[in-house]
Length: 330
Image (cartoon, rainbow, N blue to C red):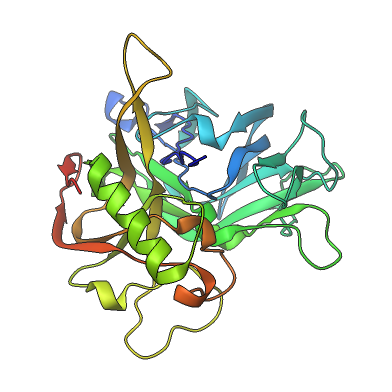
């Protein structure tokens, strides 16, 4: 049976109102966004514990009470709140987010559920430590730390802490029996500078890709995805995710998004189309690549035709405007 893969653009948001001289113009918002797509994952749950903002004056901590969020359930530009309506001074900050590490499978904690032999297992991040002298001190706590400084200024300030699991979610390997989330897979983006890209995939286009993948790479299952690349990247230069070096004219993807089935409004079992969405993309020019073999693209190794990964089609000249959605169909 053909496996239907879903696309993700997942967001987590917290709202913080800043206080300075006490005027109405001192209010601000702070948003955290999450996005990604390990292609055989059905659940990627993180048990969030604490959000800490630090500056030269110290640190401010917000306990989020081990809030469990399945990253695969919040798509596109939707928002899941972590912190809301907290007053903080204006200024320059850095941020840490603390999560509960779980090296064993525990569905009340952080864990991953998949379709494949990688199996169900706990989820951890290897970073730990305090943030400005403040941090979750309990055992089994991991830290996601953002080196980039950001400003809480008078007026509205909205940010996205974007998790790219395609780059940073590692399956159990070696003697490890748990999944690992790399802290480097998270970046902070100002929402005033970002827009979105969305579009549809025709059934015939998807079928043509699968036929080509069988002929060229000999694959027998499929994972459909759209890949985001820098402007003017051509099809032959579009590479996969990896930790190893890119060579010659290969171009690394910026992010990827799964292709979601669209179900009939009156029949939840009937698929009537497919769509994708990148929820938080910095304004600028980009290229898009389409693959129906993204399930063979790991975060660690270089994959090509011999490993069952084929980039089927590309589009250039995709312009993203802040606070707007660019439509591109395949």
